[in-house]
Image 1 (cartoon, rainbow, N blue to C red):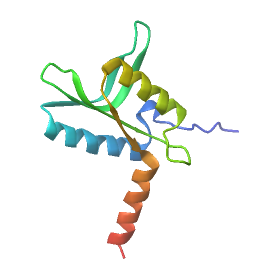
Image 2: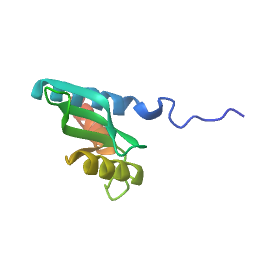
Image 3: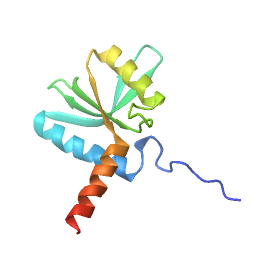
Image 4: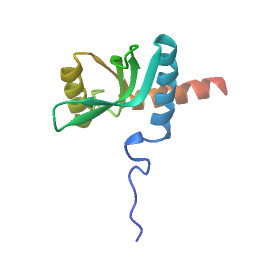
Length: 117
């Protein structure tokens, strides 16, 4: 029996996740001189976290942080995302803007249906 791979794309996320990251990157590239994806944030001497997309200042320091992820049924980020957001906010003193992946999918599908009626 072949083992199912839950996420063959690894930490990059599925195609919808990657596409939304590209959209955020484009928006931040217009807003700031620099933007990047999968930005490494040093939490302490031993630990790093990665934020999905960041707007950067002229020296390459993060000034705006975005994380895209899954949510619980109540709409809150899953525990993995909450822990990452907490660590990143403590380390950078910046607020992480969280984008709920499932909500993005619902809005995208709804818009597609509306346009194709």
